Amino acid sequence: MTSIVVVTGGASGIGAAICTELASRGYTVVVTDMDEAGAETVASGLPGAHARKLDVTRASTCQEVVSSIESDIGPIEAWVSNAGVSRMARFLDIDEKQYDFTLDVNLKGLFFSGQAAARVMAKRQSGCIVNIASMAGKQGRAPFLADYVASKFGAIGLTQAMAFELAPLGIRVNAVCPGFVATSMQVRELEWESSLRGTDPESVKRQWIADTPMGRLEQPQDVARVVAFLLSNDAGFVTGESIAVNGGAFMD
Ligand SMILES: NC(=O)c1ccc[n+]([C@@H]2O[C@H](COP(=O)([O-])OP(=O)(O)OC[C@H]3O[C@@H](n4cnc5c(N)ncnc54)[C@H](O)[C@@H]3O)[C@@H](O)[C@H]2O)c1
Image (cartoon, rainbow, N blue to C red; front, top):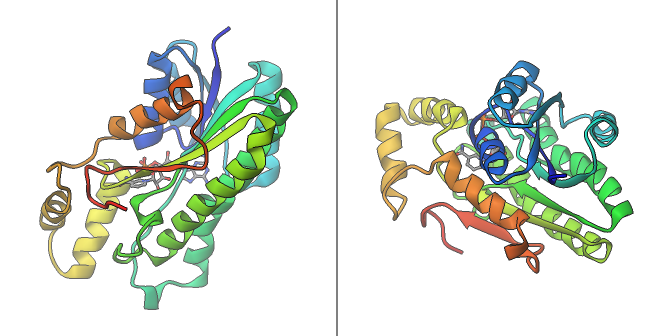
């Protein structure tokens, strides 16, 4: 039997690339997303993959989906918390509703979906979790993204706390911090940032590339390969780490 990995937010962008990369490496992938049709579309293109609807903001739903995967498909050996949202606005303009929405998906989602996965992994004393954080989880110099920055700094702290408590239970937990990745989230951010700066999306994109020493936008596959590394035995003694994958756009 191949290893079962569950990916959240797998219907689009980085999540879909992670599903594709892991399927190509022989994992049985469970593509989850709140967009059920999107998850099914991704799964249908991958050998042996499954799809499940999962809104990561509901702790009880996370628990139910984990239970159903364990009983219908098999033991979950790896979990990738990738689902995330962003919305750009000036700090002075962000209201409570936007703040709650961002923190619910990007931080509460990681907390309770990771908890549900860790509970079943702990029984077997074996498992691996990867949280998708961001370059904006290591530096606050990310314009118009104060709520997102708060959520992603939280994701890195949570990754360390989970790694610390779960290491004795045989579970490794790490994070990946992407930079300027070409996905639908980026298309939305180019629109918002250009409108907030009074410029056009192409100019913002050129600036992001200029801010990246390796001279191009990041691709979802750049992130997916590092996730695969963290899940592999090559990273067998790595835990609590938050790996930058950003072409040098931010070095810490
Ligand atoms: N694109 C970037 O430049 C970039 C940079 C750094 C980090 N990230 C992070 O990478 C992750 C993926 O981003 P992306 O660029 O692929 O975005 P995307 O918008 O293309 O995909 C996000 C996916 O998450 C799903 N999702 C949203 N809310 C959900 C919820 N409550 N429950 C389950 N699924 C939900 C969406 O349906 C979508 O399929 C996010 O955590 C994001 O913060 C992205």
